[in-house]
Length: 246
Picture 1 (tube, rainbow, N blue to C red):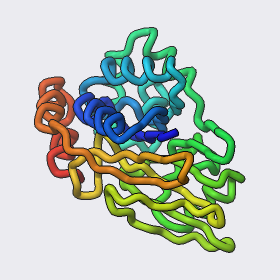
Picture 2 (tube, rainbow, N blue to C red; picture 1 turned 90 degrees about the vertical axis):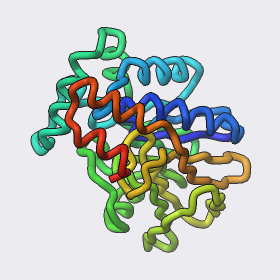
Picture 3 (cartoon, rainbow, N blue to C red; picture 1 turned 135 degrees about the horizontal axis):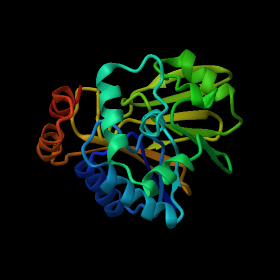
């Protein structure tokens, strides 16, 4: 089994289709989407259609904070740009899309794997894992050997050995063996809105047989995605983020 893990699509159709095509070329035969399917981008309907089709074929799909916001769950510290995008997205969703998002879980467990958007520690509170302390809280909240998530829009890998948690910045395209003697937390970065200075879309490919994990960056047509954001009347800063990866 080769499982592709995609997070933070944010209604970016060009990035999503590029990542799916890339993953298929590299042998992906299973899928997990760890939340924030919508928000920010101009193609919520099309992206949800693709993910719903894969869900019908067995893909894991989780709810993220922007999916909650699109359903009306605006959190108190939501910034004005995010709020505007959430309200715009909500106005574009039909009943089928709303029902799909509302039925999504916050956490899914599969054997010794756990999938979550933010942190396994109170996943509905949307904690950002920005360092070893937050990663340790996440890992302490589950017995899973490997946790897959997103939310922070930066690809990161954390591992725990003898109770200490360390961070590792992976190199794209280089497989990392996830040894059984450690516990792991892999953050997939963002398909639809990277923020680490690299505008290329980010996703993970996990080989369930060899237990090796590869982080990938995928070039896509961000010019078209940004133009769609501007044409939709969404905040220009959302288009600029795609151009610069920040």
